[in-house]
Amino acid sequence: MNVRLYLLQRATAAIMVPLVLGHLAVIYYATRGGLTAADILARTRGSIGWGAFYGLFVLAAAIHGAIGVRTIASEWAGLRGGKLDLLMWSFGLTLAALGLRAMAAVLLP
Amino acid sequence: MAMAMAIEVSIWRGRANGRYQTFTVPLDQSQTVLDVVTWVQRKLDPTLAYRFACRVGMCGSCAMTVNGRPRWTCRTHISKVVEAGRVEIGPLANMPIIKDLVCDMAEFFAKWQRAKGAFAPGKSRHDPIERISPAAAERVAADAAIECINCAVCYAACDTVRWNENYLGPAALNRAWTLVNDVRDAGQRERLAALAADGGCHACHSHHSCQEHCPKALSPVRSIAGLKRRSLEAYVRGEL
Image 1: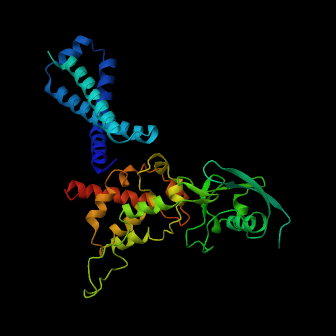
Image 2: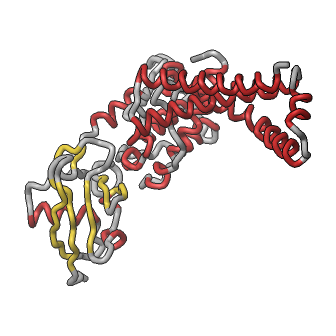
Image 3: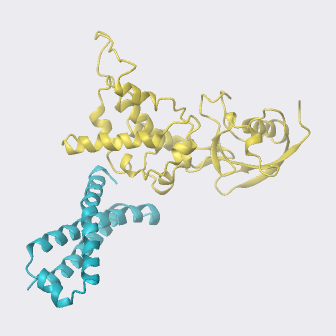
């Protein structure tokens, strides 16, 4: 962990605080409000607002999680050097790809 | 008044693959853990290796692991640590064992160097002496961390040191914090760069073990938090 990774992890955590709350509120509203899948898709498809909300969320989570996994792998599994960075990038890019794919499923028309 | 009781003292013998050896030691009034170890070395086994110097809590030489907890042994009364008539004394953790209770502190002190724990002068004898007010914020911050005796108790207690051999550790970082707050020091940029690198202050998980175990009641974790703040500000300003 150096100052750059520290800043990225703290900044993404700060960004995610309101996003997590918003995400939980959306889950609660969508499931308790009796919305059907068609209702939800009608609201999300082509929506720039939801795209920005979840796009930011996915990228912040990918960066935050990848740095955390890097620290855990370093301290608990003894991984060092190039392998450690490879794991961080692979994990982060996988998270980002999965998140963006899920977004595409509900955002693209 | 001497007490007629005796305790069983298990002391680590050998190197990393050694074992505990048990001795019976008579209890005495105001006896310290260091007194017990010295009694064993002088009366029972002169080959027992251990370190001490001042015996009054100033030099930082005599720290050992007592019943699993790092402590300064010259200021720890045996009566406070005996459990059911027994006490276990080993070398400090997180450092290679040289012999018995003596561990190799070379890496511990090398990390003080890597943390730029030495004052970097920027003036000559011809310059006027800098006036530092005792009430200045920097002086107050340095004062809170300055009484470290280099005993390595915090280093032995630190989880992050155990997990990450590159981590500079609470003692070196606490020392660096006193210098970061020294307005006379001319090596701040190099110091902050060293502290902000991999294994520096940002590796600290704030477990507070250093503060919990420090025999001088210092708070290295607070010093490290200060370093995190200071180096982050420097990084954001583009100075690192």
